[in-house]
Length: 209
Image (cartoon, rainbow, N blue to C red; front, side, top):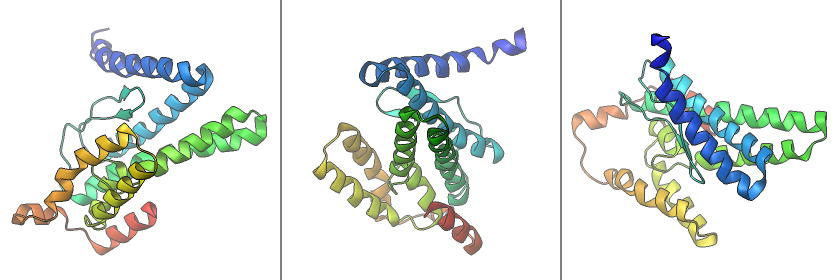
């Protein structure tokens, strides 16, 4: 049992925060929708986890925060923009597949909950593709052009004006340091971080757009 015990903290951390998040969402939308939605978030985060593991990066177990989503902590910093983008795209790719599965189950079962989960899953992944700061889109466009962070900032500002939301404000504020970094002089090492081969940039651009 000793080798198994080392996984208990991760299981408790992910399972405990998942249960708390399901409970919080269930208060507003009922248990089954909450369960399905949190499961879609988990699938999204597993996309990041698989991508990071494939690249040899050490990562923590997913942690859920009610009404704010979930995250995995990278214990190893990406060495360059290409690696960061691959980790970033993993979540939306697998997450969209999870939403597509729900979309396929709706006509097969006739249950509206699958249509609702598909809509929510696609919207969640689309929102995460906004090219700003620590959102998946912000990480992905480091391999395209970090100047797309300016576009992402404008998008989030317009969303805040149209439908103010505390989460949008947090995303905007926490993304400012990366945005400001565009306008300061970079060291040679910092400049090399964004060096991406044309074929890699094309591949990531196709996946992203």
